[in-house]
Length: 283
Image 1 (cartoon, rainbow, N blue to C red):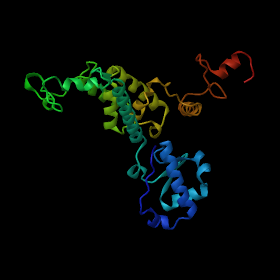
Image 2 (image 1 turned 45 degrees about the vertical axis):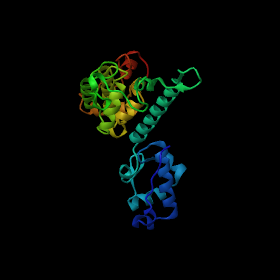
Image 3 (image 1 turned 135 degrees about the horizontal axis):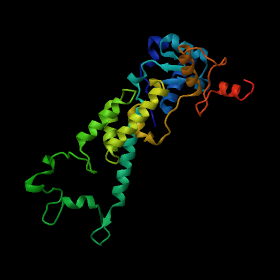
Image 4 (image 1 turned 45 degrees about the horizontal axis):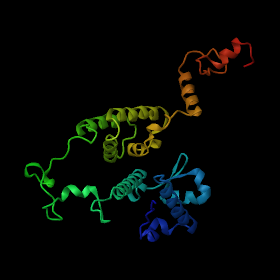
């Protein structure tokens, strides 16, 4: 569950006092919608019919509470007051990890005494005959657990410096530079299951595809992409509209076009119009 936060002074803010009741209702309703859908404060035009009217939305724009976007509206300073999509998904991922760990601990409890009392194997190294319950033994050569060195490698044997080096390479190839610390933390966790070089290659591969097909504002934060393990998705491709726009722009600077209707290439590399003329079909 995601929450939409409303300041307790909202009702008395000068911008709000001049609003109609319909505008206040739309602001609150749209805020909860954005929080639920993890839209980072963007209200799509297609969703407005479920929330209010365009006339009332313009009232919020005039008051400075919303800004008009290409395909809808956006809350003013949403990120300053509300949790971002990346933060919500990161929190949910932590909660899932915590529950998985709790279930794993519960399933590993075994009856060691034979009298029906179950204990966890995780606790057995800390207490042995002769030890005082509740006290942990020292490590090798009298080293206490609190002073043991931090591991320099992950459980799969990959060094932490190498993982961070691969993250730097991956982050450099991602088109949207945001949520860096959270992205790095998630990358390090994933590198304990996947080869970090391979993981970085996947990030770069998708980053290049996003760069060629998607405006930066619509590219997900790297931590969001990693949380969803979206390297299993199909690579993003440009829409037909984008391809046509790119083609039209290229043709403006190209030499004379032998096809009156403009070249349109088929999958085999031939021009649709040229092929029709050679084949004697009507263009």
